[in-house]
Image (cartoon, rainbow, N blue to C red; front, side, top):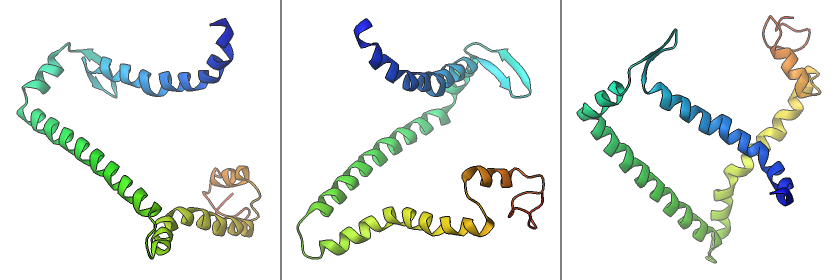
Length: 151
């Protein structure tokens, strides 16, 4: 353990994120499952009665079957579709250049839109993200500095 402390130090942010963002909320929801909770009032302990009510509802089993079916069907379908597209892109066929272009155009559009939108920020005299956030936090709302947007 003493020999690998650098590795644990590098893992620390991820481990903290897992506990705070994943395990913590799961434990809180599990605990709230045993209560009658309203956001405006403190939780009232109900024990297993919430789970008994859910398990005795026939609609619960139908929803469980539908959710399981949808999860597995969509998961398998997305993997098969991704594999088929990967094989199609890497195939050596006539006209594959056109297919690759059509396939990758959506990925390039984000960069194109960003590069086109960034110069328009200079119209408002914006030089940094901090300036954009200052403009958005103004009492009058968003708008160019000193313009009709308030401030």
